[in-house]
Image 1 (cartoon, rainbow, N blue to C red):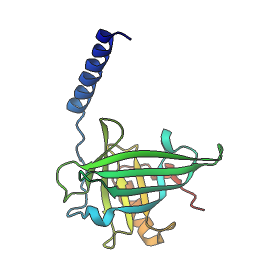
Image 2 (image 1 turned 180 degrees about the vertical axis):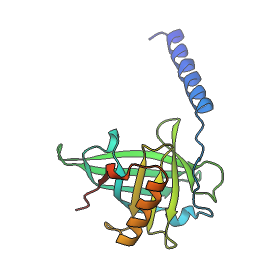
Image 3 (image 1 turned 135 degrees about the vertical axis):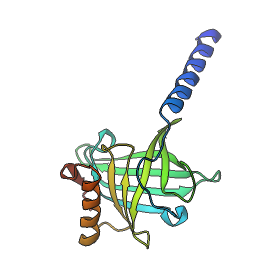
Image 4 (image 1 turned 90 degrees about the vertical axis):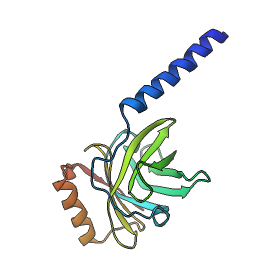
Length: 177
């Protein structure tokens, strides 16, 4: 590839990235946990339920592990087992607070400069169980520090999600062997 073509591709990529982030900034449109202690949120979480989407289709044993990077951002390691393919799938990303480090409104990226919202809308006082909403009604997760969740918390989270407009009847209940 010649130098002019390489420069053109680089400039076009930069322009598209800038336009995407400028025209579709990640904002929290939902009431999130505040104050939020990101350090208490770090560590391993088991996915209890999700609204299914392309990356997670067919996955069981899904976990999300969050660790702090040196620059203050959060390293995200999502993985799950694809039962039909009989292999593990992993996705590495990063997260950053949207407005303030005291709010549970984050933006997460698994694809370079492109971010999506990750909003912790419910969490217990011990940071053991969490309800997460995405930027729209297509993304929702129930997470736990254990492979199960108490029935009372599960029902409370489901009711909150239903009242928020989520189609909880479409949830996939993650097998955690």
